[in-house]
Image 1 (cartoon, rainbow, N blue to C red):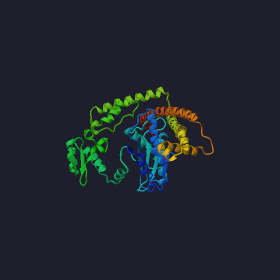
Image 2: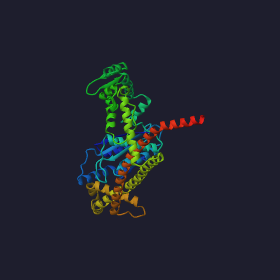
Image 3: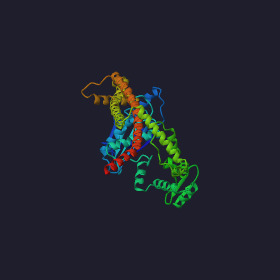
Image 4: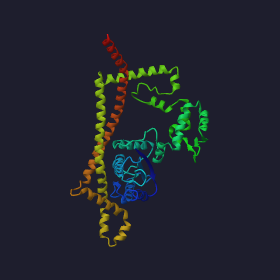
Amino acid sequence: MAVTKIKPIRGTVNKAIAYIIDPKKTDDELLVSSFGCAASESAAKEFEWTRNLAAQQGAQIPKVIARHLIQSFDVGEVSPEVAHEIGKQFADEWLKGKYEYVIATHIDKGHCHNHIIFNAVNFVDYHSYRSNKWTYRELRLLSDEICKEHGLSVIPPSQNKGMDYKEYTEAKKGTSWKQKLKQTIDRLVITAKDYDEFLKLMQEAGYEIKTGKYISFRAAGQERFTRAKTIGENYTEERIKERIAGRNPRKRRMQIERKGISLIIDIQNSIKAQESKGYEHWAKINNLKEAAKTLNYLTENNLLQYADLEAKVEDIHSSYDRTGKELKGVEVRLREIQPLIKNIGNYQRLKPVYEAYQKAKDKTAFRAKHEAELVIFEAAKSTLLAVQGDGKLPSLKALQAEQERLTEEQQRLYDERAKLKKEAKQIDTIKANVDSYLSPTASKDRENKRNSELE
């Protein structure tokens, strides 16, 4: 299990990196790695150099200069070395080889946790990293997926949205004020007849209530009030009222807006809806509509036998898996060549400065004046020498041509994979519908067969 958290860095990257690579926390920096940088020591200057190049290209530079990503693991669930590898895989796949980053795994607490600091601007196309609730959701899903690959547990996605490690572990132990408040609200919205009664029941449960722009609760022994909205979107005053009334506008809106095939019918609506006189008629009509959509799909795709449907399901899922593997291969190669392009470009751009430094009579004064350029040049040079080994580096032009080709292939695979994902979702629902329609008939046939055998 890994809990993820991301926050902006607006101050100095140097201090942030110095904190995460602290030898006391990282086993003498054995658990420190970097990408797109020659070393963690030069990372801050390399971050800044990339942002300066972006400004020269006319890109809008954000006030946030870097991002700090934290990935925390459960106590005893993973070794420091494995945690570090998971963190690198996570950073590589999330940042797609476009952003310089430094990763450090801390072992000074009761649990392993990764600190990943990455540039707010990437060095490939100089675009800024966008952080919002949607990217954070995708980030968490990727972290969970990688944890599953390594046999680790994950947090249920609907339960602990936005929790940090401390809050999650407290929730597991049942000691979190927020978790207790959440459980109390969930229990009382079911029994309350209206919102006023709900507030009365909350008081009887031992909660002090503060109303205002946001409703807040405080349990006996709790120091501060907790705003209900901080627990999750299902706990705002408006949503609590809707839940008491048995309405779920979000689900209803999704059902209305959803395109394509949906499951036969979602009977898990509120009890009040089921007691409605028109509910049975509504359910019958929707079942007929689903049956018509399913038959149309089967006819249009010439799926006349059940085996044909099964083959279609298998084909779509196999294609989806295949494009995923191809996409990973493309992205692995991009992560290899993109830093090369960056470093060759920096080497060529700054070589005249380095040569001037070599010829300078007062090298100390020259270096003081051109510190940033020389640090970047030396970082590029050491990186290229390490990559080159005994071989020869490809030309910048050849690498850029390969990058262009791979980027186009990456986009093609993204589009194909998105299309296949939609088709897979649709065909899975079609098959679920078919299985549901066939099961009563199959049961009747089996019963007739048994009766004939008895005769």
